[in-house]
Image 1: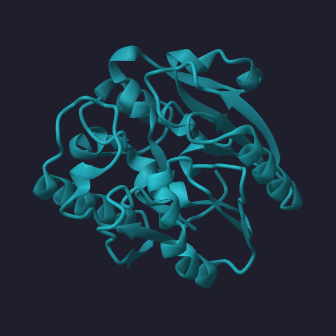
Image 2 (image 1 turned 45 degrees about the vertical axis):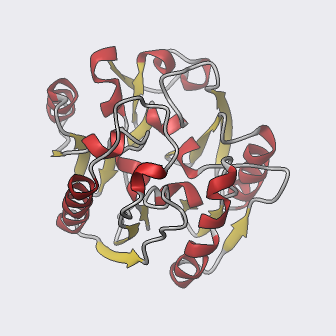
Image 3 (image 1 turned 135 degrees about the vertical axis):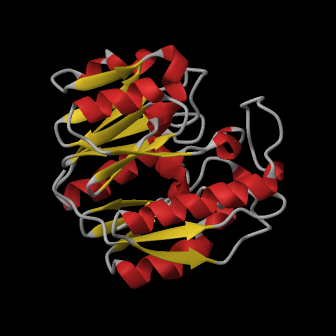
Length: 259
C-alpha cells in the first residue's frame, strides 16, 4: 500500500454513547471502558506515525465517535457523506471545517442520495461501495462520479441480505493494494473476482474490520487466527481491545478519518 497516512481526525465517545444505534444485541457498552479503549486506539495511531486531532465530543449525536461515516477520503479529494440514519445526518456539519483544513477539494453527497463512509472500501485506485440499509444506489452513484474525477474506478456490492454486517467494511477491507480481507459471505462475491482475498472464518468475522495504517495493521484483540495469518504474510498486526464499540456495531475503521 503506497499511501502514507500522516494525520487522523477522531472524536471521543460521550457519556450517552449507549444511546446510539445498534443491532448487535451484545449488551450496553460501558462508557469508562469505551473511553479507555478509544484512548488506546489514538495511542496506536500515534505509534503508526500519525498526528491525531480531537474534534469536540457531540452529546447530541451519540454515534458521532464513529467519525468515518461522515466522509470518504481518497487521494486529493474528500466527499462529505449523507448518512442513511436520520439521527446521524447532523454529524457531517460537525466535521466539515476540520476536513476542509486538511483537503481543499471537498464534494458532498446530496439528497436523495445516502452514503455512510463505512460502506466504502478503497483498494488501490478502485472503490467498492456497499449498497446497504444506510447507503443507497444514488449515494453510490454520486460518490463514483466524484471518485472518477480523481482517477478512481468504482463498483457496488449489495450487502442488504447479509444480516451479520451493518456496513461493507464490517466484512471487507483492503490491507494492501494486492490483498483484501473478507468474511465468508463476501469472499467469493463476483465483484472481487481477480483479487486475492484472505477469508476470515465465522468465529473471527468481527476481526475482518482491520485497518492498515502505514507499517502496521490494527486488528481487534481476541482473534488470534487472523492476526497470525496477517503476520505470516509479512504484515505487523497491532491488536486493540474493541469490545465496547463492537456492542454498538462499530469497528476499528469507524473510529477515525485518516489522511
